[in-house]
Image (cartoon, rainbow, N blue to C red; front, side, top):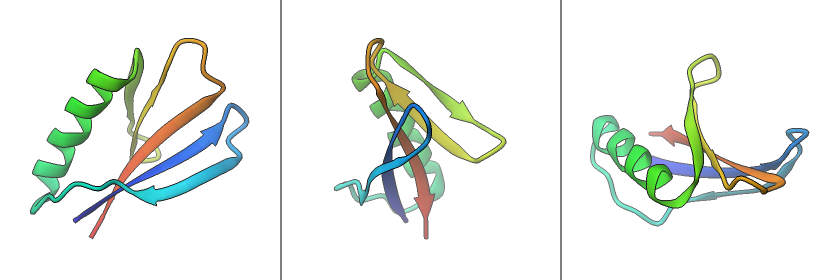
Length: 71
C-alpha cells in the first residue's frame, strides 16, 4: 500500500502529487496513519466519502492536501 499526498489550490488545480514516506502493510494501517497524521498536522481536516480521499488544511491556507491509498 502506498499513501499519496496530492496538493491542490482552492479551485482544485493540481500543485503537486507525491507518495508519503511511510510504510504500511494494509489498508486499515494506511487509514489509521492518515487519520492520525491529518489530526496532528492540519487544523481543518476530514474525509470526502464521495471521492474517497482524506483532506487537510490550515485555517488560512490557500492549498488543500488530499490523501489517497493505492495498492
